[in-house]
Amino acid sequence: MGLLSLAIWLPIIFGAFLLLFGRESQARMVRWLALIGAIISFLVTLPLYDGFQLGTSAMQFVEKSSWVQRFNMNYHVGVDGISLWFVLLTAFINVVVVIASWESITTRVNQYMASFLILSGLMIGVFTALDGMLFYVFFEATLIPMYLIIGIWGGPNKIYAAFKFFLYTLLGSLLMLVAFIFLYNKSGGSFDILTWHQLPLTGTVQTLLFFSFFAAFAVKVPMWPVHTWLPDVHVEAPTGGSAVLAAIMLKLGAYGFLRFSMPIAPDASHEWAWLMVTLSLIAVIYVGLVALVQRDMKKLVAYSSVAHMGFVTLGFFLFNDLSVSGGIVQMIAHGFVSAAMFLCIGVLYDRVHSREIASYGGVVNTMPKFAAFALLFAMANCGLPATAGFVGEWMVILGAVKANFWIGGAAATALISGAAYTLWMYKRVYLGPVTNDNVKSMLDINSREFLMLALLAVAVLYMGIYPKPFTDVMNASVADLLKHVALSKLN
Image (cartoon, rainbow, N blue to C red; front, side):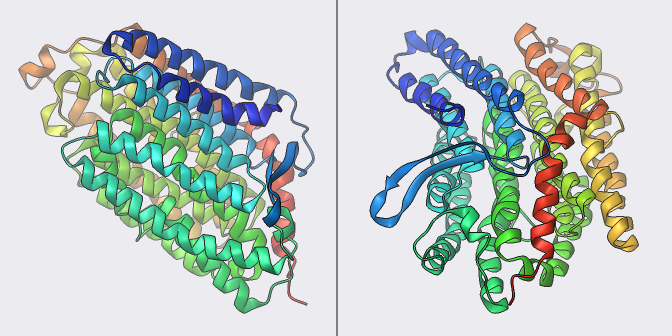
């Protein structure tokens, strides 16, 4: 079994194994087994980075074997500079989430941990699939564990939120399946994604395919105006569910634009770039203002995620190396920062059982260590230089100015709104005198919570101070993608 197969199937196998231990007396053992499984699954991904060859856009660590021979479906996986970091990010976040859920989940612990491990493997499958039908199976299968995580361990309106999440994302994906079947017939019976990239397609066909992909991927990002499911889901999801949803699952949609929309329908991507840029700017500016008036911390960070992901899609559809690379870097950075923001809210919720900003005040007086971590992550969410949040946004803004000064100027306003809603929330929750007895009785973070936040803090600072390893990996693949998109497929 190759490295990619190990990265995909090890967490799934560990997760399935945990389902055997359902008694309450086995909960402690289940937590340790889940942590061991998550750590081993992460360690398996490290040789992918170590053995990755820079300077080439070719797929690496490729594995291919027949799956459904009659329809020429193959188990075909591989990574390039665009997908490599998302494999590592997914495995890393899974470790952090298992640590975060150690004490907060007390019912059906084995099913909860199993859901996250299985979800991690499925998401890695999405990022590595090179067969269209394999991609679709992994893409849709991720809905099942997340649906269960929200619907079983979520808040008071968890069933509504889980159902809304499932319906939105499933319905959007049906048009993508139709597009895959069309491409299968057009390519003479092949589900090979790289073969689809080379198909000569007319302008009309490209437009239809573009919007078929848009239906699936825009909902997943989520782009404005199909973002309305996200705040509801974040509010009801358990802390670990929110962290994985924001850090990884939103990236599946953005990744789809890079792997399908742009290379398969390059002319349509150029033709409809104005629409993508417009929707992205609305997300960046308007949704940022919506975040400013939220009273629920989770809802505020959820809207913040929509705004930050707007930078990603904006960068992609400006079609220059700086903006596209910036969009990918922003996806990785947002994975670290958004997970950290939601986990900080989870730390507060575990103590006071409220997500309302008004329920807090003066937390720094009783939890100084925690407040220091929260400040770092808040600054990263604002895009402070030397944090991960700065690098991607700055690259996208520079790329936007390169393409059009006014687009760049409009995007840059997000730095102001981002600072406004994030720092205002921090001020009301953490600074000033202690406002109530609940805050007065709060204890600072324990060693487990310190470890969880320290892992993310190191990632946020390392990426902010030294982003070169991240950009070096993707440079050749981004250049090849842009070269491919620039060449018209029309005869």
